[in-house]
Image (cartoon, rainbow, N blue to C red; front, side):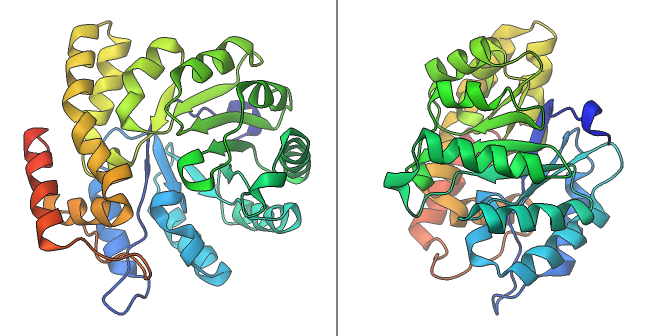
Length: 299
């Protein structure tokens, strides 16, 4: 895909990284999961996002995993690669490598280890420097629940003026801020909801899709919200949105990556164990999760 034609419209699955019982990458499980995901109208995939446990993979594992994923992503589906590192230097190096591996967009999480120093000046320098050096378009990734760094709307609006920063995935759930970004960003800047919990209201404000953990286990239902919205079937979109909120919370904030992986096992995908120090769900948590998925009509 050419830089000028990249569209991030649609629903994207930020896929979990499958590990076997020894904690090693499970290539067969990855292939089997993609075989099932590719049956649904997903617009593409995020590889090595938060649900991909990217902080727990070595760079060699990241590159091998991205290379393997590329082979399973069909033509016409977008390949977004998580490439954010703590330093600008390391991020630029990784972005160049993921571009060689065929990624269409580099998704850049905010640096956060020195969070008290990640002010507007530091983040502006980081994103503009990476965008200048990147051979592929980049997207901002704001997830303050994990990084404790929340990019203000005015900063995202400023960064949107860079021609190689094509969008933002915002997982904050702050719809007022999302509206500010949509109102103030340059024409053509693409905004994605970062959670299925607020997909429909984000679409109403002008978002063009979402990167949704829930779409790993309920891809059709997530795509249906977008379809109903585009068809003007707002009552159906709203009702489906409300139905999915509790299940979405369970596989994100409540039980985290381990919850998403457990849910994948429950619905016929391979979830498998998270990588330590994350722990799998216990029996009580699994029972709660199964009940929430049943109430949502996912199982």
